[in-house]
Structures are given as C-alpha cells and as structure tokens.
Length: 116
Image (tube, rainbow, N blue to C red; front, side):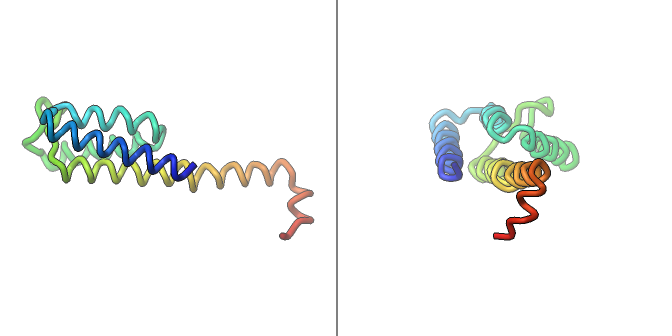
C-alpha cells in the first residue's frame, strides 16, 4: 500500500510540474490542494490552513484576491512534500496505531496472554 501511495503522489507531482511548464497554469495551486485534500483527508486541512496563515502573515505578492496564487516549481514541490508527508503520517503511522489499539481493546484477554 505504501508503494501505491508514493507512486500515486510521484505521478501527481510530475503531472503538476509538466502542467506548470507547458501551460504556466495560474490555478495549479488549486489543483494541488484539491487532489491532496482528497487523498490526505482530513489531515490535509491542516496543511491548507497553515498555507493560508502563511500567505496572510507574509503577505505574498503572488496571490490575487488572496485566493488564486501563482506558483513556481519550488513552491509546488514544497507544498507537495508537506501534503505527502502529512498524508503518509496519517495513513501509515497514525491510522494503523489506532486500529491496533482498537483491536487490542476488543480482545484484551487474547493480547494479554500473547506476548510474542
């Protein structure tokens, strides 16, 4: 499952970089946020909120009406890294721990005797 996650994320990054290179798409940040919001939900909301706070505090000049921002390659890669990291952490570290703990709580006798 981890390989599928990284392959999907890498293909999406390549897609974004090609789209930026060929079309200089001003809404590429929206495409990034939309896709990553789906595959990393709900933790992706943290990244989006931090990005909005950063834009409001720093006052970047690359945003129109504080909604559509223009991005360069480094900004796309950095945003992609944040989404990928938080999504990975959510799906492959936090969620398995929750399921393991829930499973242990449902079967406490079985896990108490099994010290494997």
